[in-house]
Image (cartoon, rainbow, N blue to C red; front, side):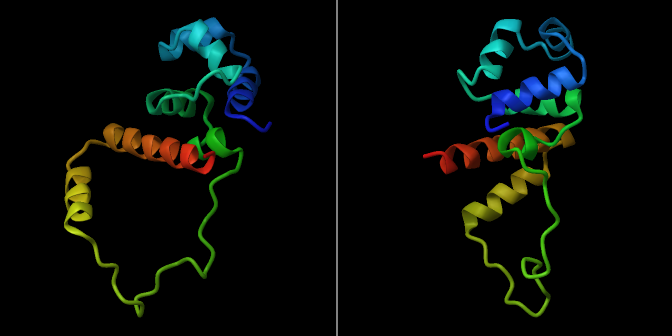
Length: 122
């Protein structure tokens, strides 16, 4: 499964759900869902979150086909390393993010994944 649409279709069929079933559970119209499954456009962050919850799959898998992995020991930041220095803009983003509720944080994370995936496809 080399596309987001194919993975959405696969997840839906694995759960034995029709397009109408998905519409009832997510609010995504059958027409939009069909177009998503046929790779006519990329899913929104809110759609990705709805699919994650409905199909019990990770957003990483939906976007890339790969399961999220734990960082290897080379990627783990060790205390002996110099602390990461943040710009004022980054600090403001983190401060704002921390004020969000759990669902809003998931939406932001989903959006970031979508943007990152789009940048990889350029």
